[in-house]
Length: 321
Image (cartoon, helix red, strand yellow):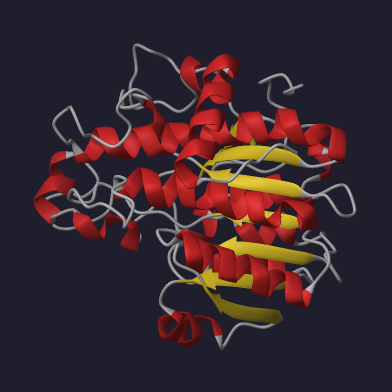
């Protein structure tokens, strides 16, 4: 069952970096899969895990860009093609991983798009939900035999404070009947990421597989590519002179909680929790919408179960660990 949503007195915090979290971690011989590990906080996630000795397999939609970014990194890093909006690409990627190893110790579902204009994949699914949630759901399903092979694997699902945007509507997840809103669509996808971790942990615990949802913090990265500077100023992310808000994290700091969830001994025997700032998060203050913490719907086990069943139907893959 999911662990209590109670902080564990982590020695790391808001300004910790991924390299600091991984400094005393030994992942020699372990296989790690990271989606989108060549942009934004993904690069620092890969750098830290490879630096700890892991063999890192990076799923990349833009392979040339990935090589340009990652070729200079130290460690055992391989780049494999992966488009999370393309079911065949997901299957091919999983097959390529299986050709390299019989087990995966850590899966970091890092890739995402945010607040994009309305677009649909080949199945007609709304692109943020399709990429951020359904693509990772199918990937985890296809990698499941490798995750469960040795016991002790961890799955890290990148959620966001954006889960607090009230967009989750399982009766119309693809905006076929309601007007499209790019932020509600993002909130829906990020809620789905957290609920995925909750249900995967529930189903995977008996097999030694634990899952965690992560809010990495506010970070200036290419994730904001669909937003104008005027929009970002209006939200307080940048001032009138183009300076990023002082509360924003660096990419090294933004990757820290993902690495902490993937490696921390404090989380042994735990799972199904929503984490931020390198610790398990507390409930959000509903009177302070810009504060951290989680909203209750992402801890709703019945909602997580329904999302799981609906996701199986949408991707046409039965995922019953």
